[in-house]
Length: 313
Image 1 (cartoon, rainbow, N blue to C red):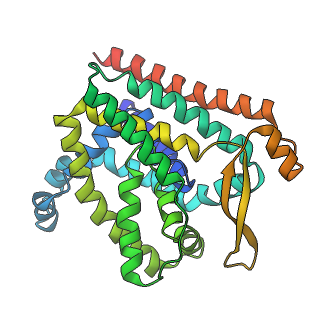
Image 2 (cartoon, rainbow, N blue to C red):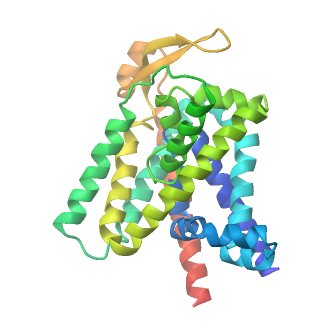
């Protein structure tokens, strides 16, 4: 029963990661960090190496399962996949119809997460401060990048998957937003909605390639330069707040694949300017409540995780 509860909890964490990765500006890596599975996830991915593949192809399945920590990785991947296939449409609906509450929730979630992650640093130094500032600047510049027109050839879909998955496992760097910059966000959302098996398969192969290579680098950095790496990752989260600011006004439009005019570029504004420019009520109180809800969710998760950790010890 205890093992089933743990498996179910990992599955729900996967749901959270997948749901976050669907939103341009929010990272599944942030959710992994918040829920305390980030380093475990990296170690599990890193374990999928040549030795693991040999075990798989020689049908030594119990050894393969143990090596890759399958009892953790499988429910997590299933949770992420479930989100991609089911929550994608819900989150897109919320983005289109309730953007201020949605962005406010993620704003609160990310800002408290960054603060809690910074508390993990046990020794501050000039290097840690510089790493944190570098992370903030890098994430900010990425969120300010302009989406581009790119080819729809299989090779570029593969590359897009490899790059996006690297971003997805970095807290604060949104894989979905990287896809947006690469001009492939809507293309891949449409492919998922239409069950375009070939396109999705090529993208997944690219993701696997990027995941297996990049996770090793992050894992090595965490083990050898822990405080500096945590500072850098926290900086990514803080810098990404620019993308999830609740009040935005469109400054450029484009025609999507359905022939509809949709915002192409937006800029962040204060609630007063939002109301003046768009003639819409800014829902400040609602935004504050959803920011508070995001903060509450993270604090609750941390308290539960700490309680379980103390009981285990």
